[in-house]
Length: 157
Image (cartoon, rainbow, N blue to C red; front, top):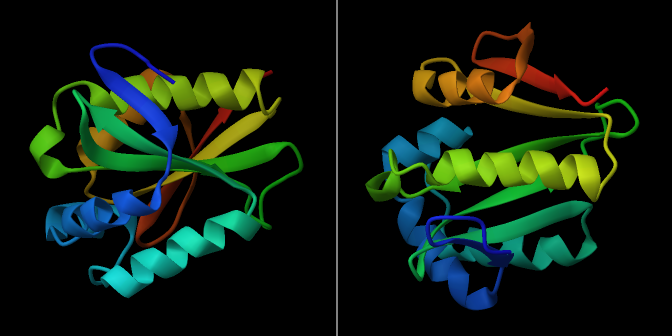
C-alpha cells in the first residue's frame, strides 16, 4: 500500500527481520515500545513465525525503498468487541519526517474501512510526548492511565 511521500506499507517478509533487529538495538526505540531490553534475532524469528497463527495485521514500513520499521493492528483479549489496538515502530534516524503521521492515518482508515472496527486503542509510555501529541492530533482521546502508560482511544462512531 503506497501512502505518500515515498512511504510504502507492505507485508512483512522474513528478510525484514534483520533490519527490525537492527532498529530495535537502539534504546531510544525499544524503550518507547515497551521492551525492557532489545530482542535477539531469535526473538524476531519467533515473532515472525507467530504471525501466521495470530489475529494481527502487520506491515513493514519502507521509506524511499529503505525498511524503517513496522506497524500492526491486533486484537487483544481485554478489548471490547469490534475494537483493536495498534502499534508502530520507526527507526530513530527517520523520526520527524512525517512517516509516523502518514502510517497512523493509514492504519486508522484501514481499521475503519476494512476491519469495520468501532474503536481503536493504543498505549503510549509516559515520557513519549512526541507520540502522545501525534495521537491527540489524529483524534485519540485519553482513556486510562497506569504508572507507566496512558491508554488512548479513537471511537469511530
